[in-house]
Length: 330
Image (cartoon, rainbow, N blue to C red; front, side):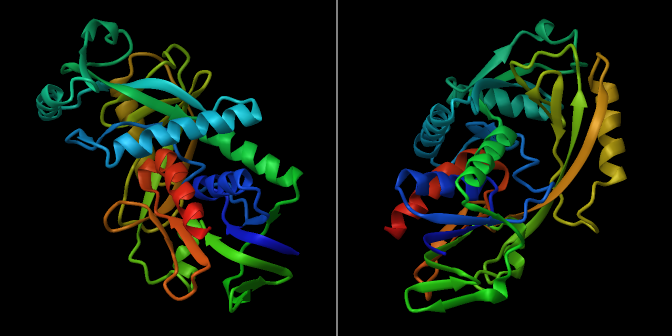
């Protein structure tokens, strides 16, 4: 088999690399072992213009954010699916400190930050402080997006479901050989597997563990994302993503009883309406030291690239940086 590109991994990064290669009519094959629990598959798909405890505006918001919105709309038009939904984050402050920080930032960012009427939410939540609203947010249906790209790649015979064997890479001049595949370019979107990648294992990634619960809540509006100690994010009818933890130190990549019971206790206290926990997931993701994506081509092997370290903002980082990486390879 001879192709222009080999893409390793079909998470958010690999899926967006695949999309932009499709747009440029490049031949490619994606190699992915299709694990059930990955950082991309456990993502809530939140696109929030104001981030962190101090409500800082996300870097490159005027460039990355609108690019991502347009990209999801365009790929949705191609597949006749809707992948991105406008929403807002209802911030039910967990402390007086977070309330004060929000009010301070609201003065500087009145477009994005506003105050809500508490009575609109007291039926469903235990509210101890004021209620804020972060406007101009989006929610991406990550599962639908990944599954749609996967299905299309399968239909085009462009997806090999297998673990990538790094020791099988041969780079000779401007050709890359992997088993029976000869390619001009090789792009790694291999997530946590980057630690085993001999071409990129010198990048100082720090691995973080995230855990989430999938919770059925029948009487809660899916029009918003709700924020308190944790986030409550609508996924589909009556099903919500609840989390997530962000642990730099962990003993196992499996779901922990500690997170389950701590989050259940919080739900018992915070929600005034019935709920039922349906699933508990965990995954590990690599994060770069500066919390920004790693998107570059190798200094020695100029036709070997990497797109990794999307972090918690992968839903809107991945489209922009995938497009930039492909553009640089031309």
